[in-house]
Each structure stands twice: as C-alpha cells, then as structure tokens.
Image (tube, rainbow over all chains, first blue to last red; front, side, top):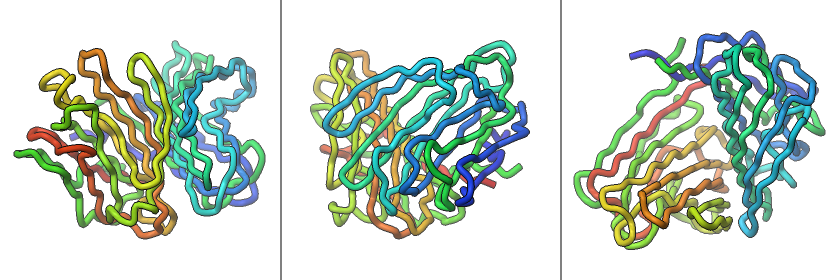
Length: 166
Length: 170
C-alpha cells in the first residue's frame, strides 16, 4: 500500500526568533497539512506567508465560538494568512491547530486553506474554523510562520505533512 | 520515507455497547487520530464523550463547542467532559444514518496538559441535524495510554466503527 501521509519536516521554536520557515517543499503531494502545537504566554497571532509573498494577497473568513457567544468575520487583503488568535495565555494550556493547504503545487489556481484551532486559557475559551485563500497561482515551495508579537519558545512545535491522493 | 499514518487498532461493534476503549496505546507516535462512524440508540441528537486514561476526575476536563443545526448556531462550554455531538440517533433521525467523527490528540506522550480537537458531521437528510467543532483540554500531565469513547446517551448501535491511528513526524 502506498504511503500517503508523510512527514516532510518539523520545527521547534528557539526562543530567539519569531519566525519559522519550511523551505524547499517538494511538489509531489496533493495537499499539505501543518500541525501546530504550542504553549507560550506571549503569542497571540500566527501568520503564514507563502513563497515570501508580503503583498496584500491573503483573505480569510472565520467562524468561532467562545462558549457563551459565537460569531463570524471576514478579513480581506491582508499581508499574512492569520490562522489563529488567542486572547490570553497560561503556562499550562496548549494551543492546537491543523491547517490543510489544498492543491498547493498547482500553477493554475489560487490556494485555499482550512484551519481548525482550539484554545483554552484559564477561563477563556476559543474554538475556530477558518477558510483562507492566498491569491497566487504559484506552487507553494516555502511556508513562513510568524509570531505577531514575540519570539517562539521551545514549547512551540510544528510538523508539516504531505498527503498523496494515490 | 516512513509510513506515519498507521492503524493501531480497529473496532466494529457486533452488539450495542455503551462505550469502547483503546488501551495499551503504544508511545511511539507524536499524535493520535481517531475516525469513528457511529449511531446512537438515544431518541434525540446525542454524542460521544471522550476521556483520556480515565473518566475521572471530571474537574480535569473542559471544553468549548461551536455548532450549527441547519437553522441556528451556538457555542457552549463544559467543565466535566469533552464531548462531540455527531450522531443521527433514533427518534427523529433517518434510519440507518451514521455520524462521522474525527478526533485528534496531539503530543499525547508529553508531560504537558492534553488537548483534543474533534469535529462531527451527522447529515441525515432530515430537518434537524447537528454539526459540531469541539476543542477540549484534560488538565493532566500523564501520557495518554488509553482512550475511552462513551455514548453520551444510551449506547452505540451494532455496526458502529472506530479506528485509531498513530502519526509520526519522522
């Protein structure tokens, strides 16, 4: 049986940088899945950029719940694909997210993402479901992950998987 | 390249059962993934309670849920369990329809608190349904060696299936 869910690379924060890069991503898969898992009292946002594109080419639609309320929002023409947001942090409660990037090696279509995030921090709860788009026809060969406001600690971990259709 | 999406155990129910347990889970992966196809005997929309290692103490389990019924949306929290509503049960639900659930447990061997992500889609070709996304936390640092899935009400019907996969990152 073919191996269809393969690890491409993994990364851990260093404490001295707010950026993590997955480069030279092979174009041999159908989809990519980025699994994020971290405990960090500083980080609020995680922004993705593809192929170092810093243009206003990222948009997202979010649906989220706090336990007592729920809402949906849209953000267009952003310079990052923001995949999560956390209001407050503790030193014990991990944040977890999976981000699926469909048809990432296509040179004919814009790139769509689905992101799922769960956070709990003290009495603050959040659960997110997001769809995002990078308006570029270029195949994705590099993913940069940015922290909005701090360096990534050694408790920040990522794994990039490749998924094949056959 | 390593094969990282490996089936650890599969369970298919031959009779109605209130819960199933994946035990003696090997500690050789980084994450766990469970895919379930279930139906419940309960007369109303029901769900799965998810427990890591033990059902107690309930105070260690917290959750936030986001859901849609086809006509309304909602979000709630719980402080004694992690649950996902997925099933077209008995009563007002179409016969022979099963709900699909995916449960992801990252970093399950670590000494950190354990997070759980679950989503369920029980489309049953009826007026009422319930799609749900759950984020859960067990405030316990023990490595996960067993996962208990319990029918929220009544029991899982015969024919329900549960698959546990291990995922490696190298």
